[in-house]
Image (cartoon, rainbow, N blue to C red; front, side, top):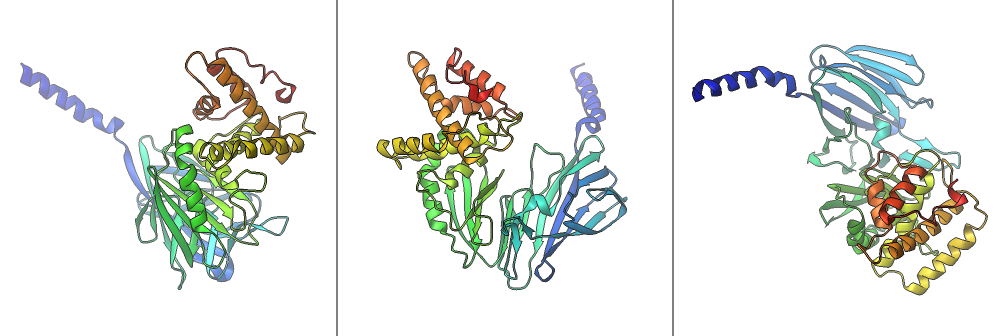
Length: 408
């Protein structure tokens, strides 16, 4: 009798397997840089086209993408959207994308020269709405064909071969190569910080102080790990000089820093650490609450340096005085995009909230703003209302600091 029951269970298991087993389909991206035309030729190849019903791409309004050609059917629904319905069997879509992204101030968010290219993968492969058969899982890889003389390529994704990377984002159905990419005649410095493989990369001759960056990161890394319970497998920091944008821009697994940007500014804050906080926390906001993500990034740009021993108490108080003076005209923190004075005022509010939480919990389990931050990291998007609720839950009572017209 036990044998018969076992056999029946085995039969049921075999019959039900196709209902839950994922059908894995290879998706290979291939990128060929064409410096002479300021373009890259990109191809997407599905090993089997049948499981993918369609990919509807958001092409934007700037005309960066052109020359689409694919197996199956390509339909340009509007200047800003195109739909690919793959053919049967092995199916490939090819197109070209312009690399240089000039800004109104005559600087660049992305740039290619005859010797290197610096850009975001988000622009190589635009975002898309994926329709596919239930149970389909795309297994994505990215390969580069480099021009003659270009020595290498770096991305924020794990390397699985020469100029080849594995793209795997569990939060997305359509895995695409997001984050910063640097290719060409480049120099790198590498280190293992905690559980993260860190690479600092820049084109040769662009003045990027790679070892300075790596040294400061090594200094503050343990303090960042103590706040943010997240260890990215890999982190890429890229940089270049003028005419690239003179600031920092973060992505989930990488960020850009202008080569001439000081590691620590004269006002005591650090753009390098500010962007590191964005990468670690991944806090996004909604409902005119940009003050949360920008305020926390700047708060920890100061606080992590302080905790690591890089700021004396006297210097910390001078920084506060500068923030008070800079933010004096601010009467509200609520906006879609925080300006410098708004961010400065947000930092002051966060410092006051941290002291309030510590004072309220000193006789029980000591809490701080770190606990609020970790709560925010679990949200899809943070709002001012949600921030107040988490803060008061951590503190165990209403907050006088957050009962402010700044947040109305």
